[in-house]
Length: 112
Image 1: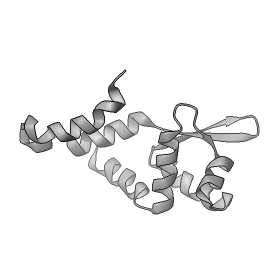
Image 2: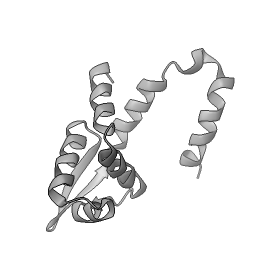
Image 3: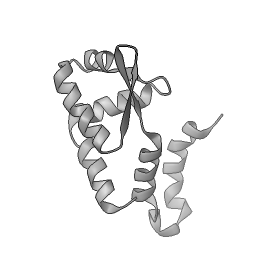
Image 4: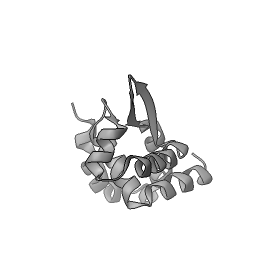
């Protein structure tokens, strides 16, 4: 990931409604959420949410897929992975003891 891509993604997440929308989509993986359900959960008008989803989509953080009369949105995990790796690539100067707490927090995500 390039710096400009990271800045675009971070700027998209730097607004409260967009951040909450993104977190809800992450929580509803792999099914995703219909735009209307997302608007209702966030208590925002559909047209306002549409603008926020547009910003998140432009940043590559979400994808929409038409299912019947609805558009279902999902988090784009490959983009999120790229962003996290960009931010943490040189984490702690190679000192595993400093990275261990972060890895412990992430471990529930990767355990079967």
